[in-house]
Image 1 (cartoon, rainbow, N blue to C red):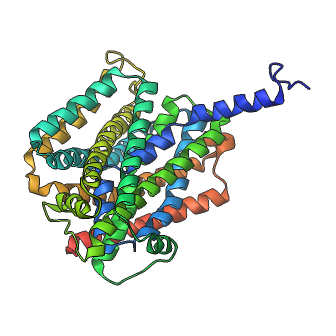
Image 2 (cartoon, rainbow, N blue to C red):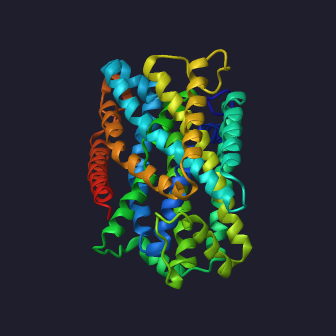
Image 3 (spheres, rainbow, N blue to C red):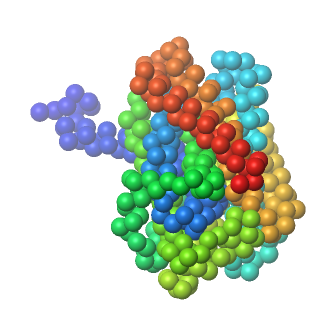
Amino acid sequence: MKAPILGLTPRAVNRVRFAAILGVLGPGLVSGFADNDAGGITTYSLAGANFGYDLLWVLLASQIVLFFTQEVGARLGLATGQGLAGLVREKYGVRWAAFMTSTMLVANVGSIIAEFAGCSAALSLFGVEKWVSALLAGTVVVLLLARGNYSKVQYLFVAVGIGVSIAYFVSALLAHPDWGRAASSLVIPRLTSRPEYWLTVVATVGTTITPWGQAFIQSYVADKRLGPEDLTGSRLDVGLGALLTNLIGAFIVIATAAAVWSVGKTVNPGDPEAIKNIARALQPLAGDGAYILFAVGLLAASFLGLGVVPLTSAYAACEAFGWETGVDWRVREAPAFYGLMIFFVASAALVVLIVPLSGLVQVMFMAQVVNAMLLPFVLVFVMRLSADKEIMGPLVSGRFLLAVGWLGTGLLVVLSLVLVATAVTGL
């Protein structure tokens, strides 16, 4: 019997539908991979080095919130074909759009600086000077984004993300961890009243769910020209991205727990040799291979973040003022978009060149503080827009999704306040 669609058989129709779903994949995966950037790897490494396997439960809990917030962002892009800043401008006016965009850009600049710091820290493990790493990273990223197109950029980002995943998975295996304790810590929280424990909990959440990630998923969905009919594939994309984000984070925690914490050592975030000490700790257990994989993984993740976060910043700024935006435009067709992207990259590289090498680890860690502080401002706009029937149409958030979204936003507000209080008191 023939199917009514173009005379295809049912099996052929299923294949077409499956291919259509695969075609939607990209924004969620890229966003998920890029969440594990230089700041993320630094935070996860410190979590494993200082608290062993005990913070794995945080990754499982944050994965749930990450999925729902990213799903809402993707659905906004599917329903409207616009980025977040553009929607805020259309619904609430230029002033609110400028406020939200400025808030996001403050967080984004901190993240971009962290990416350059990650490149410098990773290449310093191989003896490369900081100015060389900053110049190399900035040049490569700008050329890639300015001369590529959507499909090339997307595939490269996903490829880099897969490479980082493999690097840290292999590092975890080579470190011979206690898999039994790791599995139990994933579902059974081992709590303590130590202030530094809760600081690390909040930092771990802050590096997983970010302001730029929320804007990026929506802008990238719109740039890929997906629509409401792509909802199933988009949810699959977001789900896979959220899963891989936290899975990679877990591998990093497990690897550093086995290499550092298991032998009775800890790592101070303020120590200028923190990253080197973590990488070196892998050598006695797993040999030079794990050391190299850790360094290469940090470098690749930093490059991935450098590609995504400046791109998101340029998206947001251009959308807020109605300028042409998107990687499929030529440079002369969207000068503001590419000009802003280059500005963000160049200014962040300059900051890293000025900051002493001894402060790079602290820069990466503190960038997560800024992310956690400012994320709730972005999520409030996201949740309000997702509940607007006029904007969302059939993709409007129902009671359950709104309840989960606002609950997650509320929890993030509390965590952000805790993180700020902890950072201010110096605990």
